[in-house]
Image 1 (cartoon, rainbow, N blue to C red):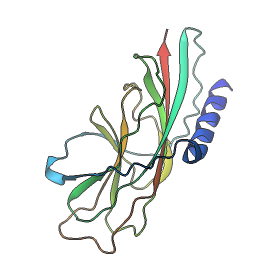
Image 2 (cartoon, rainbow, N blue to C red; image 1 turned 90 degrees about the vertical axis):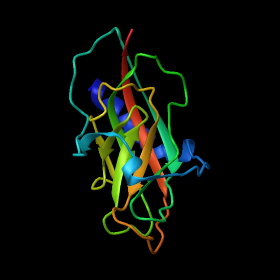
Image 3 (tube, rainbow, N blue to C red; image 1 turned 45 degrees about the vertical axis):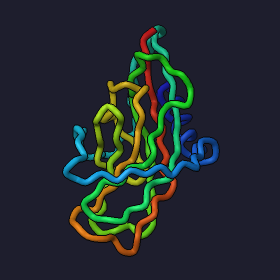
Image 4 (cartoon, rainbow, N blue to C red; image 1 turned 90 degrees about the horizontal axis):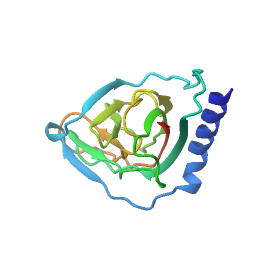
Length: 178
């Protein structure tokens, strides 16, 4: 039940993050497909994150939430990254991710669009088919990493009509041994 409550509150944080952690930054980054290097952690498959784990009194748990406006996509074959999101407050340096929840949206969704959720350590999870979901694919990685959404339409040439990024939300659950 303790795990269920923690994840319930993390989901609530995701819902309310657009109100609390709204970002007006529109710093976008475009990187040619051939120069974008990352470790593909896999394709997202929805999981509940509600698996019961034994209680450990020497463990600290928490979550942080972030929200950014997605990038505008102009050309095929280039990665467009959102601004990075990180914990708004200090968390233990040894904190590791247990589960992440996300939601992303874009106007004028182009045919062939591929979307990734990435961390600053170099890991990315393909989330194209799951606009609002959660995964344990980042489990065990540093919870102090920053995260961003990466969008690409394979091919070459301009994209028309131009897709505009909308609000992207993220909740990172973490644990730390004291």
